[in-house]
Image 1 (cartoon, rainbow, N blue to C red):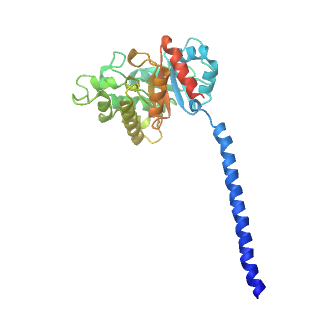
Image 2 (cartoon, helix red, strand yellow):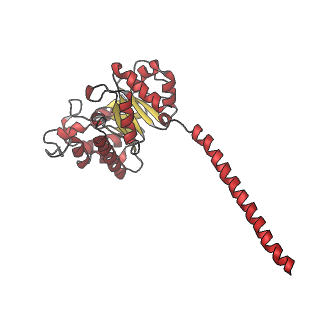
Image 3 (tube, rainbow, N blue to C red):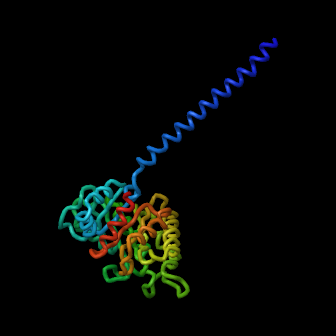
Length: 287
């Protein structure tokens, strides 16, 4: 009996030692297994959606074709185009025909004039002549008509409304004197037009150097778009020359990092003199 009493604690101690060693082994394996997962993770540039103008992606491809291959390896990279002619897009970059009104898309569909092979259509309604006055006065229902027409005909709608719609005289909703144009964009519910769209792009480049204003516009706009459509993919515009003033690529990078928690990608604007900053920004995200 006495020897059995002595053996019981000894057996328990051995069991505890074995269990402790096993746990340590598991922790060690977990530690070492994390390293390859981190190193194998795709760079940021390949985890985002991207939209460029066709001429911009062509210049980027001439400057750094490897970067365009990285972009094309992501979930979706699109080129806005206003012509079916010109050089072919780089492999993996998808064309998106660019419209400025619901009426122009409806006319193109009715006349069979949508560019051959195009599966994505973008609407960029702004306070300019290309957008008919009725659509400037009441932009939300017309953006919903654009999305409905696209969806009905097997096209994927991308909505890119400008903030200057808030300054159209006598519009259904306009900027109050006490509000910024970004605040009016939110309070007037422009992002709610995303209800039937696959993509909604917040035009934010004009405030990208003011990080608090940028973060407020994009976070609130993205939240409003997702309330209207939980499945919508929200992007924001950025530029290497916001408001026509060139900025270093590090400034574009800071803007991107400020809004990445709220968006799934970016629409980039560039002009030839600013392409170096744009490519440097993309290369930085490409790791």
